[in-house]
Amino acid sequence: MTGPETPRRVEVGVDRPANGGEAVGRADGRVVFVRGAIPGERVVAEITDDRHDSYWRAHVVDVLDASPHRVSSPCPAASAGAGCCDLGHVDPDHARDLKQDVLLDVLDRVGHLPRDVVEGTELATVGVRRLGADTGWRIRTRLAVDGQGHPGQSAFRGRTIVTEPCVQPAAGMLDGLGDSRFTPHSELAVVLDADGARHVTELAPVEKPRRGSADSRRRAQQNRVRRSRPRDRVVVEGGANAVRRVGGRSWDIPVTGFWQAHREAPRAYSETVVDLVGAHLATPPRVAWDLYGGAGVFAGALLDGPGDLDTVHIVDSDQAALAAADHAFAGEGDRVRTHRGEVAARIADLSGRPDVVVLDPPRTGAGERVIAAVADARPGIVVHVGCDAARFARDLGLFAERGFRVVEIRGFDAFPLTHHVEAVACLLPSATG
Image 1 (cartoon, rainbow, N blue to C red):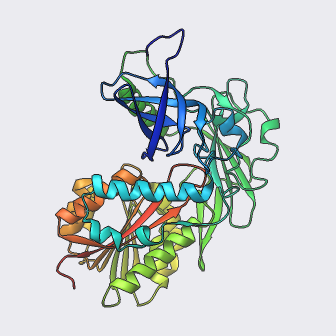
Image 2 (cartoon, one colour):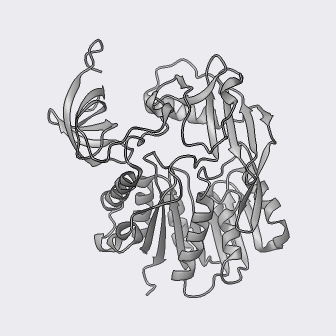
């Protein structure tokens, strides 16, 4: 960083959104990614990272020409430096337009999808769907605990804990937690279940990293590994599991386990999967694969949808999620089969040509190996769910290279006030008319 005593500031006119929530402009012959700016604005930005020859990163310190879409952030935590509501300064309707722009850009630039194909999708013609209220939507969260035992949000790219409240959690979800003391440097998993009851589990602190000179990417990888290791857990309130419902089915999910954060997301995504399969598959499906399926929410939706599935295979590496699936589908007999392990390794074990494949990978995406295996299985239809715009686009491009064509893409604002966006694509083998 140049000038450690006096941070460098530049005037930037920003003109487009970037994948990641920043806005992009130019200053002193370099591209500048500016956090806190809105396309169309002219701002004064403080350089936070100038290590790269072709671009800098910066954050807004003054707005010279404000966008008409700029608002005061409703989130006290983000205003105090937390990394939660990074688009809280943008009118939510305009934020959805920016998310649409980002998705369309990466589908072209990263996925290399034909423009005329993308232009015919709901994403291009309608935009990103709103799922409900822009605040109070979150029913699952993790809180970091500082050295004095106070819970809060982690600072953006920092180690401090911000104890001001965030506006994402549902009403009452965090009531009273700030008045309690927890194990220093632990984490709290906090959820509201389907009946509105709160459950809180404390996870023991992550082991401290070894001293070393690893670069930032290597340190980030090491941090992810440490956080993924088993840790002691203590139930603080409620139970170790929370009941979840979608349609007429229910699941008991560990409080520390995965469930969609937005209260409306499981229903919306399940209905979308069933709708796309019904609209684009010529005959009722008999065999389905639910890859990265977790507890089997999509499997349940397909079982309850049109037709009469013979078999649904659920593949996931999370033992607790598959245990929840086994319990939820105990009455289905052999119609639901669970397979624990990495998806790329377990696909070869699945029997029967699938009529439907649903993929809902983590932020890293499905990747070439999984997509090649799915394509080789010759499914009648693929529904791909993505929570990272660039990797979603990359995966669709990989499917296109394997002979699949996109027939629909829908976007969902499942993380209001943030740059994150969820997308669902429907693909058919190219030979299908």
